[in-house]
Length: 387
Image 1 (cartoon, one colour):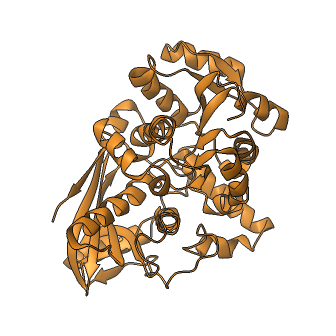
Image 2: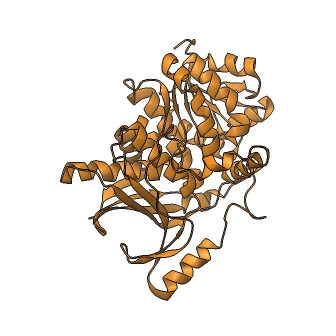
Image 3: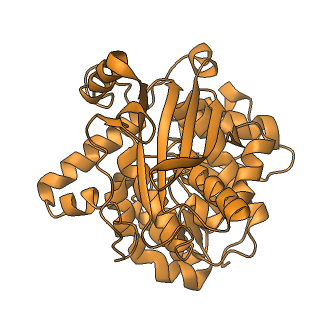
C-alpha cells in the first residue's frame, strides 16, 4: 500500500447524522485500539462535533470533489469509511483514488447505477490491493449475509445450496433515512440526463459484470404466495438488496448456482387482513413526500433504541420450504444498526481479511462468515436456523 499509514481509518462524514453515530460507536468500543481521524467538508463543524462527542482524534478537512485534496488525505490512511452520499455526487474521486493508491474503502451506497459505473476501477483496485466494499449498512448486509448464512447451512446439511430463496421482512421498526431518500432523488435525477441508466437500474444482474441469470420473480406488486401461504408486498429496499445478493453469487463463483432465484418482500399475513396489508404497503412510498428526513436529520435516541428488524430466509425445494433462517437486529435499522454495521465492516477488512485480494466487492463475497461472526459477537444482529 503506497501511503504513509498515519491512520488505520478515516471516518468521512462525521458532521452528518449517521456519521456522528459511527463516531460514537467507534469511540465507545475501539478508541483505545484504533488510530483514526474524522473528516468532513467544514473544519469548524468537525471541531464542534469532536467537542460534542468528546473525541480525542484529529479532524481533517476533505473536499471529495477536489482531486489533489482527496489524494493528499487518502495517502494518510489504510481505509476510508464514508457516509457522505449521494455517492454518485460525492464518491467518484474517492473511489478512483482508493483504487489507485491501494486504500481500502467502505460505504453505505444503495445506488446500483453508480456502483455499476464504479466497477470501471476494479482492475486498478486489483493491481493496487485496494479492497472496496459497497452497501455496508441495512442495505444490504442483512439480505446479503442472510442468504450466505442460509446457503452455507444448506450445503452443510444437504450437500447443495438452494436454487430458490425467498426473503420476507417479518417486521421492521424504524425511521427512513434522509440520506437514502436523497440518493433516490439523485438517481431519479440522473435518469433525466442519462435515460440509458434505466436499463441498468431494472436489471437484477447489473452488478454481475455481464452475467445474465434466469428471469427473476416479480417482486414489485402484492400477491398471495402459495409456498409460504401468506400475502407478500414489495419491499422498498429490494431493488438494491437483490442486486447485491446476485453480485455475491457471481463473485463467489456461483456458490448458489447459475440458475439462482431470489425474491425479497414484506410478509403481510394470511386472509383478508393480509391482503389489505399487502395492498396498503404496495401503495405507500416511504422515500417520497414531505415527512422524509433531510440529509443530516434523524430520529431521537429513544426512537433509535426502540427500533428493530426481523428478516426470514426460506430455502425452497420443489415448491416447499425446506429450511428457514433468520436475521434479527436491535436498533433503528437505518441509523443505529447501520452505523454499527459499517464500522464492523471497516474493522473486518482491516483486521480479518489479509488474504482478500484487491477488488470491488459485496459484503458476502469479501468478508462473508468473518463479518457474520463480528456482527454476532458485538450484538449488532443474530443469525439463526429456525427450521
